Amino acid sequence: MPHPYGKNIRLDIRGGSHDPEISMTLSGLPAGIAVDMTVLQAFLARRAPGQNAWSTPRKEADQPHFKSGMTQGADGLLYTDGSPIEAVIYNTNTRSQDYDFDVPRPGHADLAARLKYGDAVDLRGGGHFSGRLTALMCVAGGICLQYLATKGIRIGAHALCIGGVCDTPYDPVGSTFDAYADPDFPVLDMAAGEQMKQIIADARADGDSVGGTIECKIVGVPAGLGEHMFRSVESAISEAVWGIPAVKGISFGAGFAVAEMRGSENNDPILILPYGSDIYTATNFAGGILGGMTYGMPILFTVAIKPTPSIAKEQDSISCSRMENTKLQIKGRHDPCIVPRAVPVVEAAAALAMVDLLLDE
Image (cartoon, rainbow, N blue to C red; front, side, top):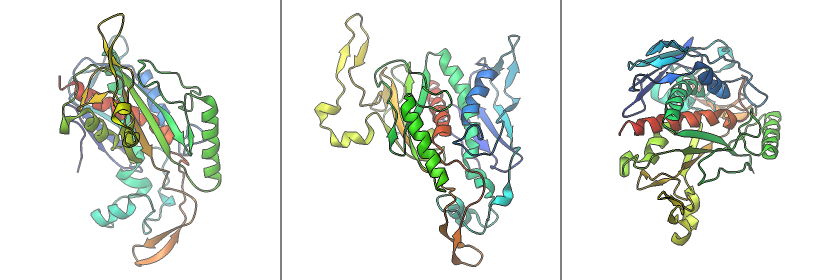
């Protein structure tokens, strides 16, 4: 059964990690949105597996094939035509023999999926619970990113912390992004990035994995998006971000640090620019959102990503057929750290939420 995202747009994602193909339908976008496939493919490549030493060796092109919803323009770009956009990505590099379906993998959806759906549930590579399906979230989010750019809205994210090593955080009040210090590793501080790479390499060598946090910033956001309570900007973004399987937490602005602040510290002073009539805040502990609504400051949020549950270390589990305790040593090809590849997925989720909120207007 599909579980779509969105109020004004609707994103349905179908398929499993080791199926011949995975697919998506994105409906509700206005007609006439220009989509540069070179830009979209470059965005997808940031998430694609097998691109570098810190990701899974499984290689997939992650090239979307559009079945409907797009027409070719004379300028070589694709344009949305107002009908639902259907896209397919073909899985070309699967190894289902690496999986023992009788023994649930700790940290994966295996146990819950078997208890809910029965023994026939497809768990090859994680099945339809796999992070593989975030490739389609990036197709939809990549289209939304290009649409948002025409509205002056930009979204960026970076690996904030991995294994206790932290990158330079974004300027919370500035309207620009710093470039990645390493184009292939999403951090602003090259030295921090090198330390993170070593932590990932050490975890892999130990047969283990490591998690981290991702910081996302949205600039150019108009004031007045969102509503109070159940249609807040936070809830729209969070719903999309929770569609990423590895996410275990999300916070906005200062996040949980506000619990240790006084009101005089947490409140963002409201000011008017000395050379104009623009309103701004001197700090941004609120993350650009008050009462569920935007007020023109950058939106800031941080996402916690769990360590990859597929590790080479021996773990305790059970045999479902024999109903007895057993040991499990996972085989296959897996990321020792999901964080770097999850960065564009967080950007995609944020883009979906922002487009859905914009269409409220």
